[in-house]
Length: 194
Ligand SMILES: [Zn+2]
Image (tube, rainbow, N blue to C red; front, side):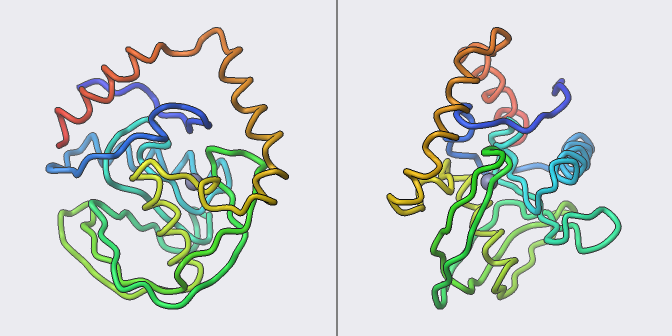
């Protein structure tokens, strides 16, 4: 299938609220898409990027907590499952789909994670601190959840202006894709990979 060049989608694109589907096959095209996603993530100075943030309704995300192609570790998590949450931590989060907006989010401090890599091998590990936070933020994306769903009322009030601006930009964009076309593309991707 043909997939156009990826771009990072901003709120309120409908694929950000989409329940992503488990992947059943990894092909060369998917590996190329992952590479493109890392480039986009570094360009935007992010530490994580979920597939549905670039329009792909698939259950995977990428992470490099150092946001640097020359350092840190590039990790791909396919069909991730998380369990055994431990502790609580409160920390500021941002999101590449909400440029310039930040808010404190409460999450478990540590989790046990299981996922597949790009070679189709299963791996699991206990993670905590920053990596655990990034992984939970990205996992939320796959379920159509966004960090603004977690912030308290006071924070939401503070960033509401920015959220409204994103909504306005989307409404005014003359090149805005039609919802029907977006849904057709999602179904094509799902048919190919799920
Ligand atoms: Zn995000």
